[in-house]
Image 1 (cartoon, rainbow, N blue to C red):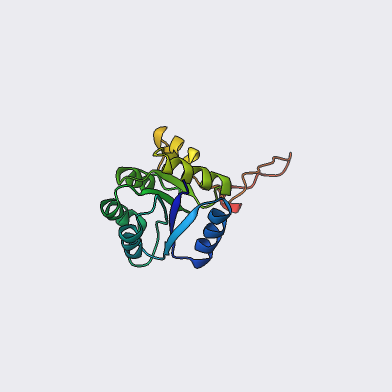
Image 2: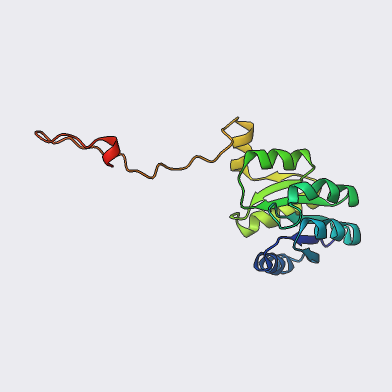
Length: 165
C-alpha cells in the first residue's frame, strides 16, 4: 500500500524538496499547504496517512493547528518537521497528538523512516531532543561562550583580566 503524505511548510523550496524525496521513495504526495489553516482544510479534504507539519507559519502555527488537524482527520498521523529543538514545543506537540518530531537538519532517510513508522501507527522522535526532554535537560539549547577562555601566565607579565578578552 502506498503511503499518502501531505506536506505543510510556508517555504515552497522545502515543500518541493520534500515532495521530490517522497515521490522518489514511492510515496504519494496528496497535497501541499503553506499555513496551519490550509493544513486543516487539507486534512479534511484528503485524509492523508501522514502529514509533515512545520511549526512557524504565517496565519496559524503548526502547534495550534495540530489538534484541529487531528479532529478533522483522526487517522492522519502528524509529524512535526521543524528547525526548533525547543523541548516546550516538543512537549506540546506530543500532548496534541504528534506521531513524530524531527528537525529539518535530519537526514532524508530519517524523514522517510519517520513517515513509514507513523503510517504503521508507530512514533519516531528526534533522539537528541527526546533524551533532552526525558533526561530533564534544560529547556534551551546551550550556546557556546563566544569569548575564548585562554589564559596563559608568563613570568613577569600580569595575566589578562576577564574583561580584557
